[in-house]
Length: 337
Image (cartoon, rainbow, N blue to C red; front, side):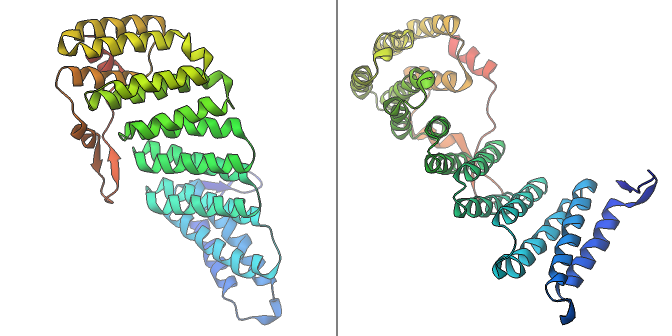
């Protein structure tokens, strides 16, 4: 990619210009010319900022990351440490570095840079800013099917927003965390996270959704244990703490589904019909369909507690990754046939 001069003409290839600027930046940073004093570091920062921008424009993200790493070191050591500059600018550099590593598919390095950015913002009591970064981390983990990474990032985002007293946003983070806990097979823990959203009531519009997800998580857990006693008890608890849940359509369908489950394999036909009716009234999302399908599979003897481990596989870096998800159309077809 080329850059252009003030008259619109091509001035130099962006990556080559980035190389020149980075060389000048590193030279200025290590200069022994004491007469320039602090200005040699401010010059270095200017060169490195411009180098990173040129590399970003040209798609040379490895070089962009290299320029930003040098920039962070220079700014931290020679500007901030001397009482000058702003930590907000340092946080911006860390965020840009994380994005450069993302473009290079350097997952661990990207996450480390995101965390450093969030820590700088928290140090400035900018908890909302930190929460935004943790949400970016969560989205990145989701892209990489890193279920544990998504859970950790949503949990960190929740804590950051609580620090900012943004209870409604924190509750939204809880809902996302609960969804991934359930995907990992931690159904009881997920249910408690969803129930907490109901109890706290910070997002009234989501109260019924949270209650439904809590009860469904307990239903799946109970089905895997071949005993719906816990799910029935949990339903009593939710009914006591949430008036809307007691009279909700969602609850009435789950009660019917639990009754069908208790009939065992003979209840599969009824279970499928209730799921179909439910889907007609409230089109089911992918997460709900996958949870209901697990219960159906248990009823048919096709799924057990040990199968939860099969939802993940090891990535090249050794981290556990969720297997590539099936489409919602495939799951709906299996659920309703």
